[in-house]
Length: 434
Image 1 (cartoon, one colour):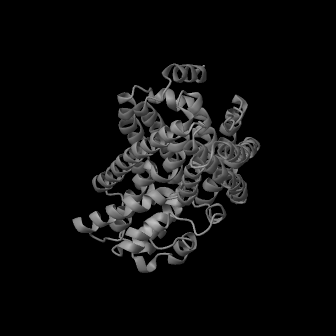
Image 2 (cartoon, helix red, strand yellow; image 1 turned 180 degrees about the vertical axis):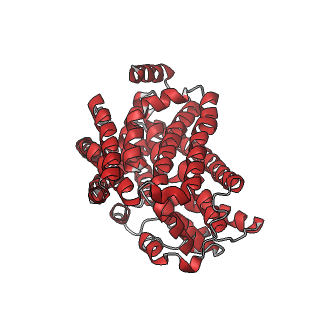
Image 3 (tube, rainbow, N blue to C red; image 1 turned 45 degrees about the vertical axis):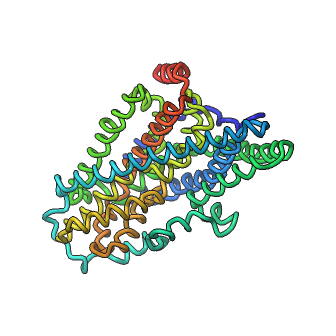
């Protein structure tokens, strides 16, 4: 039975185009800020196209991964148990790493104290600007509400609203339902989903042509809108966050890679095109289809990739987790609001839930932080106005750590499951390093 085909590999020329586009965007932002800010639509155009296609890509890959390939009922039952085991192991790993990321961010912000000395007054901050950015953010969910939010109101709602968690729920349910059908009908349903997947992946290949244009527009707007001088007041937070993000990748994810015998820097070199794409667009979602493609080429079993990576884009946002704790405590420090151990424990507990639903797209972390602070009540949401000018600059690091974290997670689960072809991995890494 045929599978959803992988996207056609992008040529090295696209890699060069993205690099050149990012550099040109920075130059334009510095020399002609008014022109650069007018390029905002170019970046948003590309990201919107990608977001449009991510939903069908995730749905088809996860549904087919859960449905399995065997028409033998006994083998199908075995595959169902195997998929369940893979999903459970992935969730355990995700929870461990995101919790560690939250704690790392909390520790660093207490040591560096980037907000100390600002002495901002929440009453004078631009709360209207915060409201504009977070106008689509709903209240943070607790307990049963958080679980109920995973269930779509209708079959089309997750696709219309772009809710990745609900899309995953629907995909898993669809895959499980397909397993219960008689073999002939099961095969027919699989072929239907595969056809949709072929269309989605073909469309992704066409949209990738716009990657340099999107990277140019997003980078030009960022530099032109906020400039370099305007960042001086928040430079300490930015530097601390970037250093923390880099150390998390090198130290924490590097240690994980050493345990499973994966060369971290070999992996980073292998994914350099995706890294540049994410750097330009500030969206780890923009690289999702090609990331899955490359991980399969690197020796990870397709069923593992199709379960772990899409799920990780909602449950394993390491970069966003680091940002959330650092940004929340930074605002408290800047507003001279002392946080007790209970306050921080409550904040951490809420972030353990809300970080799982943070969209892996530009601004998702900011919206999640706003909703979380609204629920905690200790830190005024208006204080987020302090972050409006620099949040966009930190979104690149968040997205990059999210991307690398999910790539590492796929290798971890594959190694754990015995579904990693190390010879294929070595060939893929060696080929890309040439």
